[in-house]
Amino acid sequence: MQDHADRALTVMQLLPALDGGGVERSTLEIAQALADAGHRSVVVSAGGRWLPRLLDTGSTHVELPVGRKSPWTLRLVFSLRRLIARHRPDVLHARSRLPAWLAWWALRGLPAAQRPAFVTTAHGLNSVGRYSAIMARGDRVIAVSDTVRQHLLANYTVDAGRIEVIERGIDPSTWPRGHRPDDGWRARLDREFPALAGRRLLLLPGRGTRLKGHGAAIALLGGLVQAGGNVALWMPGADSPGRGRYLDELRARASELGVLDRMVASPLRDDMRDAMAASELVLQLSDKPEAFGRTVAEALSLGRPVLGWAHGGVGELLARHFPEGAVPVGDAAHLVQRASRFLAAPQEVPPFAGTTLAQMQARTLDLYHRLSSQVPAP
Image (cartoon, rainbow, N blue to C red):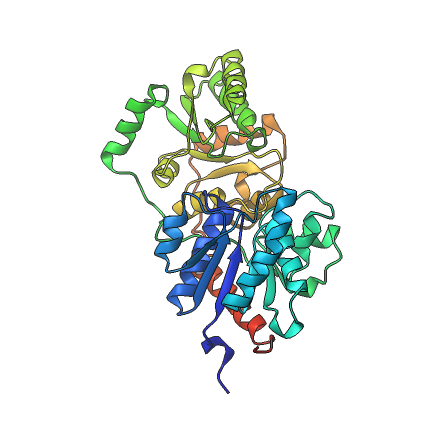
């Protein structure tokens, strides 16, 4: 008998769009792993700016707006059912709620012998309710952290044996320990943002939303400056489209604290590895618990110290890999105290022993193989 791990698979992943983000990145990483292993990768989405990257993996893309929240979207159940019949995937993998519902309904209309295995990935700590419950209905449910696993078990009727924790992985070659930018990088940054010039850099990456903790980072900057620290705060991603009013609030708060001339809010950039490597401290201060906290793993892989609130996936990562960086949630005084100590005596960050990209890919493909071996061939 042929070992199931040697069998060529067809895997169909569903997500709303390919415009960039953690869900999209994971989709591309698994698409690449499937192609590298000789399997067939099919992705269903509305497309987006990362579509060329997906096609470069050798994947097939089918354009369907499976993330559009409209009554019209329900008609896509029939289109999706036809796609399943045409491509005959061994595994149907839904990565967010509306695509998962569409997949669920499409599968219900197929004879049992023709249904692929159904996998869901809970990428976030979604609001609890019937709409989110679909993410716990997969034949297997991937949780991106133990935090997410506990969230699912606490809020939904799901057999613990159906949940598999597969953390998001990072590539150590992309985030190598000890990396430093080239000699001209900081000079170019200082010319672009004079507020950062000649100052020790605090970095908070994150899109321009109130949940990402920009206000806490500005308060930290104010406390450190008041104590005589020669520091500046850079928040790449805080300047996001349509977030002008929020950005005005952040600048007003920085002005109140007398640190507006030490703060930069910019769009997200492609040189985040250099930005983290050049920073004295990388911050992760999201008000709402994060499901995982990829920037924490990336910074720790580089060997850079991280300060973050001790909750959610961020708290989980810090507790396991850099407990000195975990700060009680919302304790602004403690945050200033810890940052001051780190700046006075730079912290030695141990080599990062978290999940690598290759491990995440291998564990996901192993899950696909195990499930496909349980589904009768049509």
